[in-house]
Image 1 (cartoon, rainbow, N blue to C red):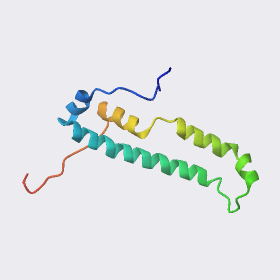
Image 2 (tube, rainbow, N blue to C red):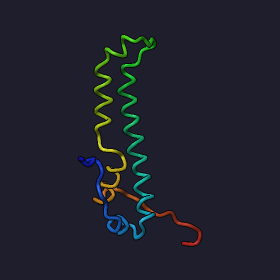
Image 3 (tube, rainbow, N blue to C red):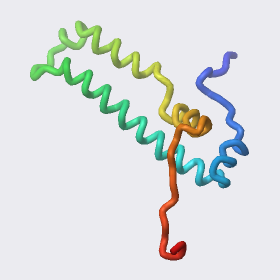
Image 4 (tube, rainbow, N blue to C red):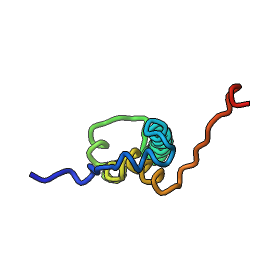
Length: 104
């Protein structure tokens, strides 16, 4: 039985070391993953909008191979969460803490 190559074991101690707290690190990573996912979705929708037509018929669905290839390309791309973790661990993610009244 082969394992899924997209499954990667992460060292939580290394992830926590960046912020000093695992939960803060996960919060930063999740926010970045949402940004990446949103950007990818917008790009995909813009590319697929070029193929949109006002009439939906069955022949167009089967004939539009370019649209299918674009969708498959985006499906094969690394997941947003994996990309966000890699960026975070490489120090490519900017994050800061808000000042509260207690800090002033």
